Structures are given as structure tokens and as C-alpha cells.
Image (cartoon, rainbow, N blue to C red):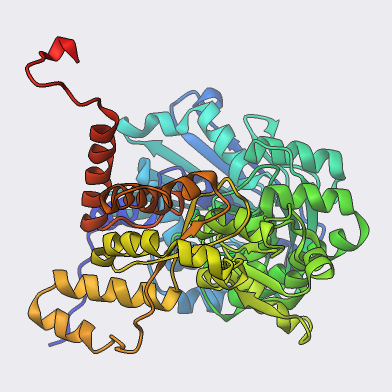
Length: 594
């Protein structure tokens, strides 16, 4: 036997309030949507018909109720049953003409949202050529229709009788503010207790001064610039606002979105591509779809296309700015370089903008990559901030120009440069390459240093480090720790395997390469006075202590990770140096005599 579902209206209202709508405030929006739709339907039949909506709060009604009047099409008794007392049945709305795309919302579930603040909803409505219908709905699921005196005007009046705990939602100030928030851009005049809350034109069509004023009120900032937006297939017009301060790339951008001039969301996300986090938008669209709550945009193919086209318009603004206003481009990049670099990761036009305009850090001063190539040819870069800081001065002293690619996106963008011109040469600096540029010692000096070098090497052998003596600039740097990137990876792989269980160690060992036996180097600078004095120390023990100290200093200077063995060596050499610096006490002397 077939049976019908039993619907608990109170349960549905609870579902709406806690899971569909973010706040009871949406009831004002739904009432205005129904009123505007009714006017739109009447204007389709009679273009000169009156078009206005007015709300009367308890300040005007005097009995604690809220009334909403419109000069729309009105409903017949049949339509009242089909539209006001039906939830989820779209077919009848189609037949009656209330689901065409030019309408903002739908009857039924829209009016149902009023039960978020009311226990009773009264509707008085008259359709042209039909008697007035009086309909009353209750929060417990009942409704009734009854005859009454005919009203003279065509249109509808909705009266809300508030719940005791929701009376504040019907206050004059609350209703006025919500009506202005949701309906300020509506095409028909809306008044609350006689006060007009709608604007005559869209802010981006009313001139720059009004637009800036609207932005300051809505977002709380004065934009760096404004970009006109237009996507005809979505019926979208509006403006993008370039932020005057840096934005967090990880934070979702919130945009003010109107659908058919009714506010959909104050903080709609995913309207722009992810890289465009430097902009906020105010837009109105007629073809984009809302979610069920009508508080966000529905993700579909049209929204994806809109996102791409808006991104293209923002990109066009950037390209034009770079071409026409160098000063403003520099100021923009100083604030929003991360967004531009993020776009340049997959857009050649933006890559060219970064190449020409963004000054990157180099050991020869800050300069754009295009200028760096003109001066130094090959774009040689370090992909790590610590590595760059360790090697920048040494490389500069050897006449080697290096770009710091350790900042967000920089190394990847440098690697993309050949896409702009296949003659561009890019090379990642390997620290071990520097040692080939250092000067070797003459044979006599090298022969004299052999005892010192041998003693130093014995001290470093337990740490797997090779000691070499070279002459390089700057002379003030006594030692430099250099390691091949591949050797570093293999060393860390072996260290991780030693700390892992047998199963995981076996997996890691499969990545080890036996031929990768290039050891890191501790390069001692023979031009440094301290190193030359060290080379004349009389005992291997003194050599070991001083070389160990320089080893620790070179690790710290280069921001290299310290292994337990390195930490132990640092502690031991530090204590040994203190011990050597202390005078030896004479036999029989006291502590105070020392």
C-alpha cells in the first residue's frame, strides 16, 4: 500500500535555521525576493504597472508585527495553495510562471524561512480580476484560507507575527539595516517605515567617487586601483578592487556578489582564480546559480568559465600597468609580488612581467632578472636562503654573480625563464663548484703545510669531512664548509636509515648509491691570518682543537644541520679552548692563587 511522507514543519524550520541558513536574518531577503519577483511578473504583462516595495516595522504597525507590501502580480486562491503551502514541488511553479530565470527566488521555501522568526504568517493577496485571498500559516504546519473584504490594489501584503524570542529581529533598525544590506541594489524602490533604502544605480556605474565611498563602507579600505569586470555570458558586471595592503595567499578571498541585484553573499569565495588573492570584487550576475541556501555560488561549468575570464581581465590590467605606468607597477609589486609570481608560475605574460620588473635579491645588489642577464649572462642561482647567505660574499669575491632563489616561487620562476627565450641560460649553483674557483697554493707552501693538513684531516676523519687549504677572498673568512647536493642527500639518507626500524631502513637503503662517496669539504683560507697562525702550531693536539672549532663555526655560519657528532665536537672543542686559555696552577697553590 502506497503512503505519503508526513512532514513536520517545526522540524523543517529547525533544519533550515541550523543547517541551511547561516542566520535568521535571511527572512528579510526572502520577503523582498518574493515581492520583487511578483513585481517582475506583473511588469512582464503591464510594463507601466506600479513597482514598489515597502516594509512596516513594529515602529509603524504599532502591534509588534512586520508587514511587507508590494505592487506585484498577486496570487489567485489556486496559486496560494500551489505556492504558499507547497514545499519542493517545482512543477506547479513552472506551470504558473514563477520559475523563469529572471526571478530572484521561489515561493514556498522562501516564505517558509519566515518561520525562523515568526509563529504566524498572514498573507493578503489580490490578482487582477480575482477576489482577495486571505491565507494564514502556522509554525506547527497548519494553514487556512478564508474570505475577507476585497482590497482595491493588485498586490500582496505579508504580515509576520513574531515569536517571543525573535521579536528583536523585527525591530525598525534591524529591518532597515537588513533591507539596505540585501536590497540596496534592487531595481525597484524599497522603503522601510518611509525611508528609501535602495540606490538609483549600481555603484560601479555611478562614478568613481561613489564607488570608492561604497568600497570604504563595505570593505573598510581605499583600493589601490579598480578594474572593470564584464562577463556577458553570465550577465556579470562589476569591479575588482586591488587591495592597498598585502593579502594572505592562504586565506580565501571574500567577494560581495549580487544575483539579479539582490545580495547573495558578502564573502563569497572562489569567484577569482587562487592566484588573484590581491583583489576583492563587487559584482552582479543574472545567470550564475546560487546554492540551496542562496548564500553562496553553486560550482558548475559557468562559474568555472567566469573565474577564468575574470582572471584574464585581471591579468590584462597587470600587463597594461607594466606597459604604461612604471611607477605604479613598482608600487603594486612592492605590495602584491606574491600574487603576481603565483600567476607567473603558469602564465608566460606574467612571467615576462616578473622578469622585467620584480627586483630579486642577488649578491650584486637587487635587480630584475632581465637586468641580471644583461650584466652577467647566465642566471646562476641558489635555491636556498641559507645557502645563498653562506656563499653570496664568497661568490661575489670570485666574480661569480648569484641570484637568491630561496624565496617563494623564485627558483621555479628562474627555471621557467627559457620559455621566454630559449637562449636564456639558467644554472643552479652547487656549493662544491666554488672550490674549483679558489686559488691553489704554490708547491713550496703546500709542502710546508703537509704536517698541518695531515693533523687536521685526522681530526675531521670521524666526521666524514675532507680538509683542504686554498686561497680565496674575502680574507676575513677563515673557513668554509662546502658540500655537494647529491652527497648531502645520500648522507641524510644513511642517517635516516640508521634511526629507522629494519623494514624502513631496508627501503631507504635501496636509494643509496655506492658511488656517491664525495665527502663535504672544510676549506681553510690561507689568506686568513688566523689560519696561517694555526698552520704553525707545534702539536697535532692543538691543530685538532683549532680546526674542530673552525669546523663548528663554518657549520653555524652556513646554517647547516648539526648531527649529534657535530654537537659533541663543538662542545669538546669549546671546552678544550677554555682549558688552553686557563693558566696552569703551580703545585701546592690554592684556587685564590691562580
